Image (cartoon, rainbow over all chains, first blue to last red; front, side):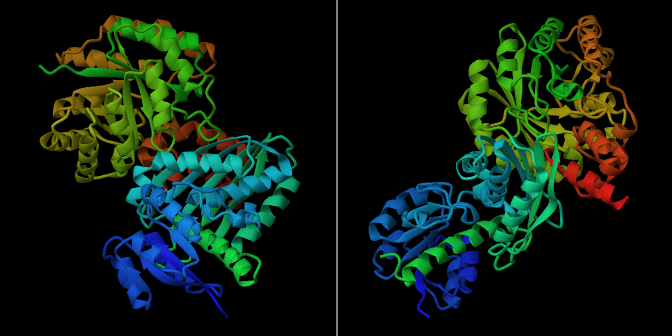
Length: 291
Length: 337
């Protein structure tokens, strides 16, 4: 079967893990890996027989056949890359906090209209893990206020995350409101250095206007099943409980352990989500619905 | 002799003891009494720092900005401080706090995670704030690790770095040895913040000073998370007796506790700080002091022993801010029963 050609820009931990995930895809193949210096990620790409460059985005612009790009560089570089990629007509998934395009959380708002956009932002790891739960509660009970606490292992928080912790909380907050449907939201993140490293875990509190626990449970259960299809390690630590009008749900995310260790479910989930969106796009292109 | 600089945190760490329900008038009255007594720095706000008001940590009666504005309007000498925990509060919040009158910020991280404070310390310095790096849960790290993290905060521009015993789990010799080591390697002043879970807050503070710390924390009557903080009144008395220079008047600070704070606490139907089995377990197991009241609430909600919850949290190596873990632990314990 024909596959869509994809490029990975920024072969760090995230980019290299993406490469391994895309290798399993029936709709996508990584054809180009774009770095700005030689690195472990570049070497791994070469070992996989994939063409690489260390000259950055200019070299990608010379390629005519790339249809999808995954940008896992950083917010600043992505601001430069985004207009170039759009001009080229390359469908881009932005895994940085730049948020040039609209947010996409596949289990919640991925649809044909959104796929017409040329640049979609993957929010944050915390957003991918918690926006669906808030959306599910909102659907059943109308969320007035959502509050999220994400705990991740210190080892899975790279220098990028550490230097931009405010961007993490603010971007996730906006996505809980815009995509999750909460009237208002607050987000907190805690790094835990325990050894062995903890799996990513998320606590979601939601103050609701229609506190019907059975209905909420059904809605959240269904959402969990939908997410499990692309993030198999997404499980309840605590299925919905309620006190007064406050619903509490806790989620653990175990990664697939492709390139990143299993405890780094936070990094895994954003990659799983990006591949899910890319495949939806590829199916449309290959099926002749787009272009 | 070196002067000890006193930061009183009755209105911030002490907020935990009243579930963050001080009124604006109460805060103003307490702050004025502290200023009158000569306290150098007065920290206020939600116990979990700027915008800690939440389902997870408990909603405050007012938001931090209302408290800052109210207290700033009455203070003339003492410096007004806020706590900022990156991951909870943001630089935007700090800007707002500064605009309303906060002069000092204590940027707090878990003892091994100082690099999440880089943005915030740099931003605070660029705003011209006196900036303190606050390394929490210090009992969980070796002195070498504490130094490494303190050096990071220094490199971002911190004016002072604190070794913070959030669990009240440290012993006087340990405090002494760590601070001597930090002092040998750091060019900036060092501070110590203690909790009284093992009854050692005053002894540890004195040890800290003798080892070279210049900044010491206290709160009136020891109001604070767990069994409370180092009581400012006793600290000042002990400093006087040790002939250690400081700016606080002993009688006035005793009066601030006795005549201003105590009636407010009793009026609220809250307890004055004292040790109990829960706070002892916190110090013994090395758990974040703020977990105490949340664990007690969860024990009632799920019908399990508070001590079991605390011990389990210690085993899981929960760090500051992970109050949400309490619900899961209590829920699981209740299922095991």
